[in-house]
Image 1 (cartoon, rainbow, N blue to C red):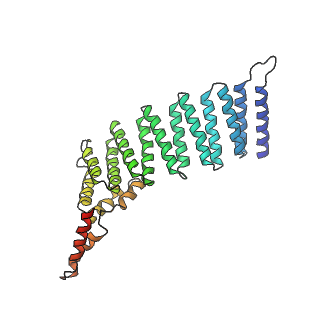
Image 2 (tube, rainbow, N blue to C red):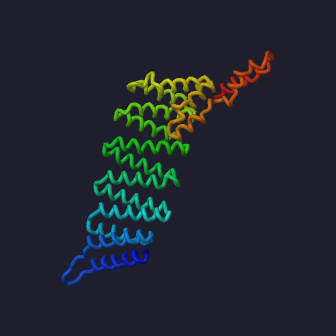
Image 3 (cartoon, rainbow, N blue to C red):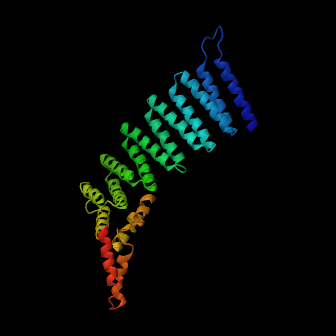
Length: 311
């Protein structure tokens, strides 16, 4: 079967080369037919699992579409060449081809196709290179935003934000989350604004910036339905517990279903959040009086207060 497909591929290449020849009666190469034959050859090679040869055929197809000024089809062929690299587990090369195709889609006036290709590229590279995936998702979001397709843009921004958290690039994650929240506000998806406020608070507290976390909640009071909502009460309780170094209160909020069932990257921020200078001493101090009338716990409480003052 494979041998038959390879033979078919070579037959198509021979036909393509014939299309490119000129003579006394044929002054111009037939680029359109040559591109079509190389496309057929590429499919034959792909079916025979000869991915390197399929990639070369797709690049030839792209070359002749470019000569023929059919840039959209050239870009499609280059994107397919990238997919052949993916089949060979050569991800960086695959992404290079897809990014090149995206540039051509943009030049051809088809930005939506470019953004969707960037999204696909992000998904391909994410398992092996989170940084590159962030870059691709943000580029795709930018393209959709320029086209006023905010729902698609904000979904891709969300992917980038989560990966920035996973990468522990929390300053950038905070900026990305604010942009997400602004977009959700613009399209009047207020429940998602609430969720993004919670994510912002978690990110800012992990950055050690209580003031920024508190500001995010205060700004959200202007959102319809936020004040008094489950999300709002949880964040007010969390901020109060964090500010007062009440480990039990912070633990209760961070392990509540509201936070535990967020996207996994934010849920991990919740369950790993610690109050500054806490280290478990609050719980021991609270439990100490049960131990009897001895004054032994007192120094530990002093130490806890002293540590808290340093933060």
